[in-house]
Length: 226
Image 1 (cartoon, rainbow, N blue to C red):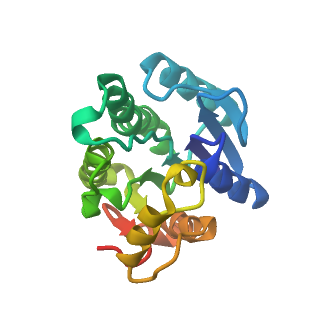
Image 2 (cartoon, rainbow, N blue to C red; image 1 turned 90 degrees about the vertical axis):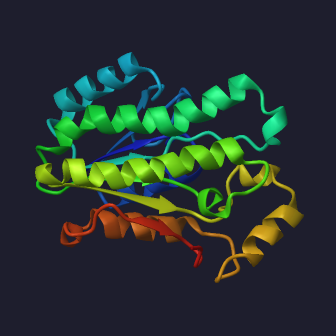
Image 3 (tube, rainbow, N blue to C red; image 1 turned 60 degrees about the vertical axis):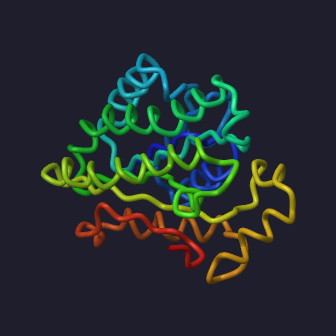
């Protein structure tokens, strides 16, 4: 398969890219950093020109695309009243605008695949409505709405659209969160542990299987979150 993953310079995106590379798939990675996993391209997903250039590159180098994983994301953990405008704009642009631009641009290539897939990333911050994460949670709720709507709009082109919502996962971002807050979050889950990268990859594996052609418009939270 030909798989494009945004945000592959670190964290979840890096691990997902490494997984599919190890299985022998063609993996195109992108991000704002100068280096990342896969056939890596420096791309800011909130800039239309960058996204269009990436489309042209993938079309020329690979001819088509089977899977788009919109992993690139940004977070803010400030009280709503003290969140600066620049932080609000960065989170909204990266999480929502970037997902929209990438999905819109690459849907045309995905139409050429026998099993086109778009997988978006949401977060348990959306259903949990966590204090201090109002803007972040709002963008992820919007991504979930986008996922369900695109499932209908892209179904005629045999493209499924789903989303995965990890619980707290060991990444650089989580390392900045106080342990007592992490413990409080885990206590709200049915399965009271942090997510492993393999847990997230397992859901993505399920979504991209050819046998999952009838699964679309779904949001899967890990850990028993509802």
